[in-house]
Image (cartoon, one colour):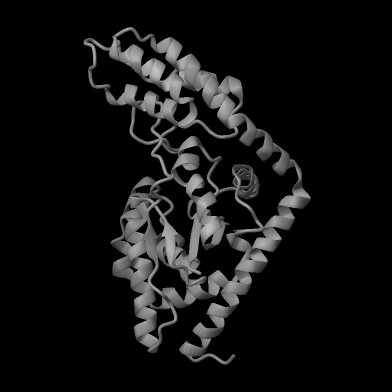
Length: 328
């Protein structure tokens, strides 16, 4: 069976964009493939977070993974730093990675501009650590966004380079896996085309009702339609996209009809949207809080996931060492 791998950095809570953009697809993937889902806490060190932030964020993401429906009985769910084998492969890949190619990566140049006082070696070698995460399990498919495509190409490049250097076919070239069908692009509340943490325009799955209402009522709108059947501006279309994702079809049709007839009141639309988001998120929030409070269960899930991941990693590293020439 083909192997699918996906990781998320513990930089905050999951939002509606994460759920509709990836999580729904992950729920399907865990039924069809051998899946490894991990929390990339080592990757977060490129920004030097505080220890408390790492621990809290890892637990939060793990609880939300489980609350959304990822099943530790069907997929390996683990924390990156629990699988030390990734560091050994990271070392081997770094030995065959060159300064020029690392300096040319878009993610490195962007991060170097964003944090000029913290351009560390981990930031430079981010693509090799990402490649190690993937190649460690000899993954075939990796669900990623377009912003990670260059790093995916580097992972394929490192796989080819290792195979050519040592005359083997140990690593398959991982395929960027488009999350189509189930995946829906959820826009932000600020009129932009993407909901995200850094954009500050997100509704998080664990937001309480009051917070959701406040965020939605602040969403960007305009003065209203000026002609029947007109095209919705981006900010308004964003609200309707959210409405389609969380509301009943008849609710969407009701407000869409009001817009077409120039009879819509955005305040009413926002109030309905807020209540529907609250109703959608409430069960996930309740489960996430319950999982987060059950520390023993969370640790057991992480340990079992790490065990599965280390078993996979051990097979890869045994062969990698043999190809390189190290003793068993």
